Amino acid sequence: MSPSLKKNPKLFSVTPAEHRPGTFLLSAEEDFARGLSEAELRAAIAHELGHVWIFTHFPYLQTEELANDIASRVVSRDILGPLYEKVWKKAAAD
Image (tube, rainbow, N blue to C red; front, side, top):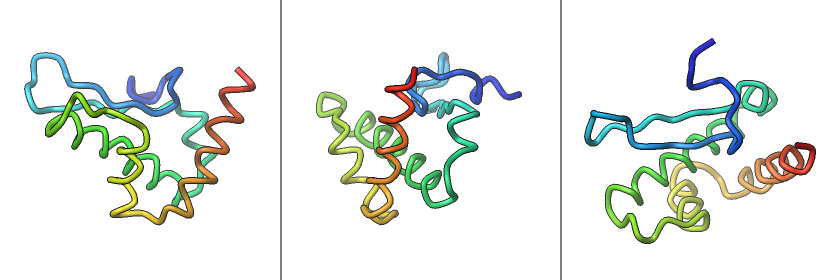
C-alpha cells in the first residue's frame, strides 16, 4: 500500500513535500477513497488541488469554501454536496 493511501484523519489532504519546494503530496485514506464514485474522487482531488493553488498564490486565504470555488471550475458543484455528505458521515462514525 502506498504511504499516501494509509490512514488519513482528514480523509484527503495536501501538504508541501519536504525538501522539494513547489511540490505537494496529496494523501487519501484508502478505505474512504475506495468508497467514492469516480465523480466524487475527481471532486475530492480537484478540491485538494484548489488548496495547492491557494497555497501557491494566497496562502493566508486558505478556506474550504475557496478550495471548493476553485474545484468547481473543473467539476460540477452538484457532486461536491454528496462528497461532503460522505465526509461528514465518516467523520461522525470515527
